[in-house]
Image 1 (cartoon, rainbow, N blue to C red):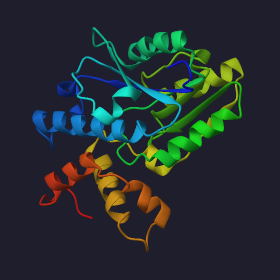
Image 2 (image 1 turned 45 degrees about the vertical axis):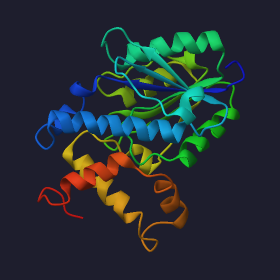
Image 3 (image 1 turned 180 degrees about the vertical axis):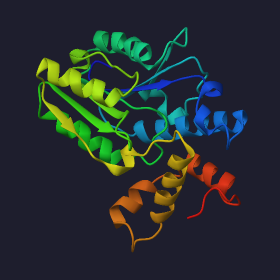
Image 4 (image 1 turned 30 degrees about the vertical axis):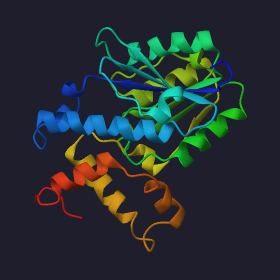
Length: 241
């Protein structure tokens, strides 16, 4: 793997403890299955990236599709100590294998497309040192974090991580780029997030309301996690398109 250039770090917490803010709408079993589908969707998309490897940091048993196995490294956490420690585990492996840069991606960005991630990676190629971020919709979280090199800052995924990472970049005087990709800002934490994601996904089927390129990217491969949410909520009053 010494010839790879970008490490994609995907921290994965225990499914049974994930998405607790959706507990009023989804059972524990449904939330766990949603996480399983989001992980599968993300692996399928990211394993198509050239010159990259995926690092899954988790205590879950993650079945890796045969076509993706050469691209994926599973690093077991050993203990559930949070996203920052999970990234540190990946960082040690990245350091040994001399990746140029890393991108931290959570599992819950269902509308993510390869085109947007490729744009971020391409941007990093033009810089010796750079930090790039995609904020969450509420600007309190960091949905995508690019670090070149990976050791340029430690991650800070505690409260208000977008501000934390922004401040760290300013403190060390490194170049900082904020990417405002709407699809990447869309994460799944609350029922309002579910509503927005489903609306945007279904709008992607209408070329009159969305660009044809974006439509094709969102629907390039079957998005099992969004389809699962659609099936759950299609007959409920909580969501209306």
